[in-house]
Length: 125
Image (cartoon, rainbow, N blue to C red; front, side, top):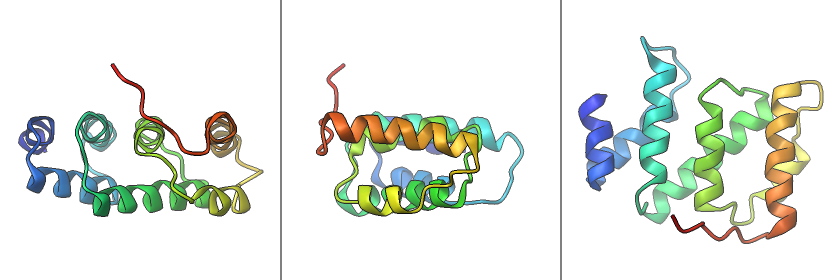
């Protein structure tokens, strides 16, 4: 995955697709947490096509709805913040996992972003 992550950072479209497919996997991998975090961070730094943005939005929303918030979810949340919710907020707010404190932490993070600006505008670096 190291060359794929480097390709994402360089803006290679094929590597971007592989990176999104990698973060969509639920299976555990050796060093998976680190590699998935780095892939999400690299994806956050490049301009993604709309098709990949949609896949990322649904992946993060589905993980939050299931209460599945592994350690790399922090980078997924930052990635979702950058690409925006685009009408996914009603679905996310309807399926909140109240009993899971980690899922609630991220839900509150997304709610605060949504309340500030429903159309999240990416920050400039």
